[in-house]
Image (cartoon, rainbow, N blue to C red):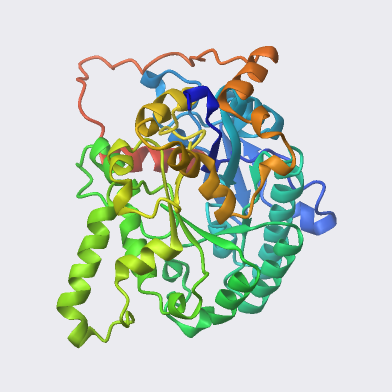
Amino acid sequence: MKMNDMVIISVDDHISEPPGMFDKHLSGDDLATAPRLCTTENGTNYWEYQGMKMPSVGLNAVVGRPLDEYGMEPTALEQLRKGCYDPKARVDDMNVNGIAASLNFGSCVGFDGGRFHKAADKEKALIHMRAYNDWHIDEWCGSQPGRFIPCGLLPTWDSKATVEEIKRLARKGCTAVSINENPTVQGLPSIHNAYWEPMWKAIVDHDIAMCLHIGAGNPAPHASMETPIEAWISTMPISIVVGAADWLNLEALERYPTMKIALSEGGIGWIPYFLERADFSHERHKAWTHSRFKGTKPSEVFLRHFLTCFIDDAFGLKNLDALNENLVSYECDYPHSDSLWPNVPETLWESVKQLTELQINKVTHANAMRFFNFDPFSVHKREDLTVGALRAKAAADQVDVTTRSFGGAKPLADGEELRPITSGDLMKMFSHHAKAA
């Protein structure tokens, strides 16, 4: 196999939602009260919903910008590549990047639909969440058949409505949902509470995978407000270990052996030690902890239920034998700052070329296809979805990948010295953009 022969499916990308996404799915007061994109006097975009204002900031949409212009900009749709908010342009950018298919998480509504959970009027929130799901499945994914894996949101503040939405999503062909890894931050019972039993059953009955995306529930910790921001960014993916440990001890995994959980944007290099530690802790403490693991090692449960994914994780791939090679997949993270667009194939090939052809196929696309019950080859010929074929199409379509500058790095003020940006600086910048909105 050569680099251009790979078929790549990304199980973690993102959308910067466009204005008007509710127009075809709501009317009257329901449409008038839906989330809406607003613009400040200085051209900054923000979303407003039920009195909440959500600024569009920073590292969530920087593909196509020079690295020295990464930061809390961009703050307006006009500063983004069109592929951030337009599905046809997104497919063009996927072709340039050799990406055959993609699973996308929302932005303004939260990776897990958290904005609807925070809304005071839950009756309206349920209407708007369902409309968001319809837009995501019917317009975003439906406009480009075989190129997107639909991923819905659930109104988990209402157990009955959650079960009904699972059934509705399944009827629409949606095989994945994104939920909060720690619902206690939303004022809901923990995942270990019987409150969730109806959802577990509905999820398994309809063979739907649950995606737990970093940042939605357990916050990525940083030591202090003076901690350099690079320290915080370095540990962000690994912070998913908190949720992973919690879900690994979920009793429902024992009763539902086919339950599927995806750890989205968490990497894989840390997992071998995590599993080793989980087994060690269980063996040393099970006599007094009354553990849920009855004759089964925690590592065995993890390797049966959890899909993991990587952006650039050469160490993890070198230690693939310590994982379940059938539950490891690739993620591009477009258009976030970690995304290697438009050079994913080159970097990915360097990490996987030592694997067997079967293993390469598994981690690049086959595992994702099976886990999410998604078959792009039912719509497109396999040979048309290889890296080489997609890039040839992008070249024929003259997709522009020119780096776009917005004025270069911010100039220093008189007497100002360069210093590391801290976590506190980031919080201040976010607060500034929120106040501007």
